[in-house]
Length: 403
Image (cartoon, rainbow, N blue to C red; front, side):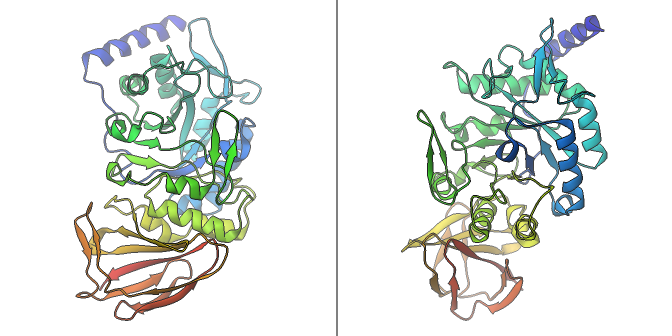
């Protein structure tokens, strides 16, 4: 059996050199939607937990809302065998991780796994450095659909080279895999990531708070608003098959109010960010589920045009964001970052031009119907000046539809 594995690996390696390696096209044409274990469970991962999460994703309605990936993050690993092949932690995955993956596939979901470009992962488990083609082959045999590839313990290796090597390994293994580059933005992956992967982290890790910094000494985790500010200037690099990733969501993890969770989710939708939940799906409040499954907000995120939103105005902690949508429609989000409610008075005849999309919001010539995405209430048309209030640390999110 081991000899067969070696022969297959050699064949795949040769194929990787003979054929032109690339990432898998036609994947992630809209931002990936799913769930990742790290934000809530960290290293406490197991077969039982992942099966429970998969069950909850289906029964809660999240699958029907568009979520499809169950991604196990760090610490699923056991050791490498004498030939260098990685194995799962047998205590946490007693039937083998392939059995877990098969169960998740049986639910109509897809499975994602985690590794690292360094010799060790961030939690000190075996990384993929020097084993990229072996690991890609193993993932293909297991049925993996998504790889999150981290950047710990990389000892000054070249980021483009390291991520390209894993891209080539995945392609040689012949199983289509969404490739998530978790490089933290250190080497400007937005400038080269589109040829290598399907999404790339633009910042360090997210932290479960609205607007703060968690100082770890040599690095920091960032609150939602801090990460939002770090997206400035990046929208031109995003589009179908290649997305800016401001990190997994903290919605429902308890560090923020319902208003703040709603603002967090809304801005990730406006950013055309991957929507990767990070909470305990088996124990969600109704408020959390309502936020994560809002049909109209998700439609803004998943719009086929694939254009990231932009900040149009910022005055007295009240921001106005626009996102061009398909069929000539627009999404608009008023974000209140202050501790007090703010009044809005917005004249739709205001000149709004998106230089990236080469499109005007031509409300002076065209009448749009207005839908409040969070109340699901129609608010008339853009002929009248919009007057409303945005609660503290919350949003008013609207869809403008041509009729």
